Length: 380
Ligand SMILES: *Cc1c(COP(=O)(O)O)cnc(C)c1O
Ligand SMILES: [Zn+2]
Image 1 (cartoon, rainbow, N blue to C red):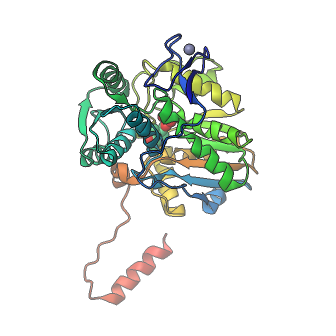
Image 2: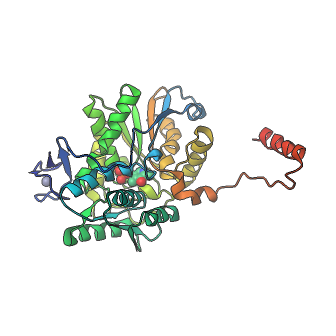
Image 3: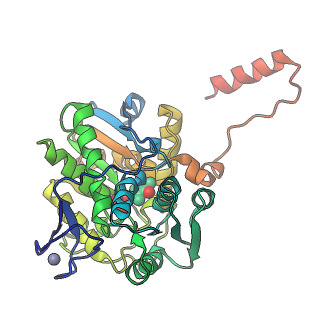
């Protein structure tokens, strides 16, 4: 296996290299990895038909499928990147890892470092959701909180990796071995569906997941239209797509409940540009959703399909009606939504929704409780 620059096509041996030494471009792996990943027993994630969501979409006669990535060992698809990158770091003899994260990559890195028995330093923005911070700390990682948005954590992790002997498991396009771990998502989709869907809706930060789906499907001789879903409060790729630009520029200050895709790309704008290129190559598009739309989608996904997702994980559900309204999705399209992260990681957003609880005054009065239930059920 070798590393290869996606821009100038320079090739490198499989070492810990984060950017093309010639042009600064993104590196990808070519050829088989051949390493056993560090494992927490990860399995093929379920692909579930979502008939009640289909029925809720006006005029829709197609199929909606949910690829449930909340079922990964630490609760998000980031486990796929980290188990691959951790194996490579160990095989190169690096005994400590660093990861800049908006939460999920940090949790994955901390979990797999615990599993591998090596120390991890996780760097997150100070405003990261408490559920994610708590999870990272529980795995025993050294947790550094940095004021300001994600890009500042990103720079610090890169400096520690380049100057102090850490392997950088940050999950943008910076670690090619990590990104290679996502090809399995596209491969699984093709296998589970028995072919390619018309569209795959992907919550998108810097875009490795977009690449993984694309590459995995191509490997299986399939293509599909990829739709990057971002939050209105942090949508650099959508902005460039809508403007017809080829270059993605950094976003100012992200403002959204979707922490998993709160990715302003400051200092790694090239990642966004590369992702935009893949989206266009696939004939796909990019769409932004509001926080209000995210909350509605979270509630719908949980109550009508039984899947509890963090705001980012529900973003493809929020995008469905918008894409139908603009005609981007045909009425009979076959669509896959990637549900990327678990609701347990950001329960606060659910806690802030109106609570559907009812206080029982006298638990011995069964008749009164039954009447209360009947009353609630017939007003539901
Ligand atoms: C990291 C993350 C994303 C974005 O993935 P990229 O590959 O960086 O675009 C989407 N959803 C969740 C839950 C994430 O943690
Ligand atoms: Zn290059």
